[in-house]
Length: 288
Ligand SMILES: C[S@@+](CC[C@H](N)C(=O)[O-])C[C@H]1O[C@@H](n2cnc3c(N)ncnc32)[C@H](O)[C@@H]1O
Image (cartoon, rainbow, N blue to C red; front, side, top):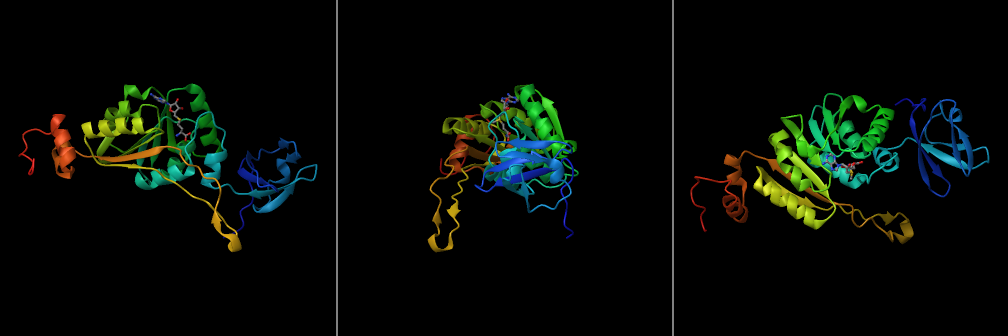
């Protein structure tokens, strides 16, 4: 592959000699100002990634092409953002690929939106709902700078009012009290569509699971993604001292028509579904 050179407006990851990481967009004629000196972007534009640049005070930075994980962690944010470990799991479990249509709420700073957009482009679409204009503005700017806006429709709306789209392949909820929005997600999903939510506390998770059970959902799962980093020192290889212990719980489910849903449920869930009145006129369950 030919060496790709850094283009005007590109995102660039700068790493200091102490390992501090900064994400910048190299705008022609502008510069990055830090207490380590000024770095003119024109001195970076046109060079290959993987080199070292110096500020006018002689401080050196490695210039690298940012990965999706770097972008998510270092983009401008006004909200709590998704962690790359959770974003990766969601892209996998929501089965996102070119052409898929997914609803996401709330947009927040757009960290997850960009992971979803990169997964479904060029023929798919992310419909991303947000309540607060100031968050949407930040997300729009982040997506625009990365050239991902054509694959995203940003909507300003309280999702309690429902979604505009129907027959979508997937819905992801990252908003407080996600349980309240499960019926809206169900209405938007295609048959067999995939649902996911991220919730920080177990009581919220219980409420989402109960709402899914009361709706037309099967294959309900709750997960945590834990990554334990290791110190990569060959002669003293061991886990790092610290880890991110908690970000949120992930809840997954799949929409299924109530008539067929019965056959997927285990006995406990069948009994609960019968109690909720969702299963009617079916033969008695064996063993009850
Ligand atoms: C934790 S942030 C989402 C972070 C996002 N996933 C990211 O990676 O940047 C939750 C967002 O949901 C929005 N929100 C909360 N309730 C909402 C609602 N009912 N309708 C639409 N958006 C909502 C909040 O304003 C906030 O921006």
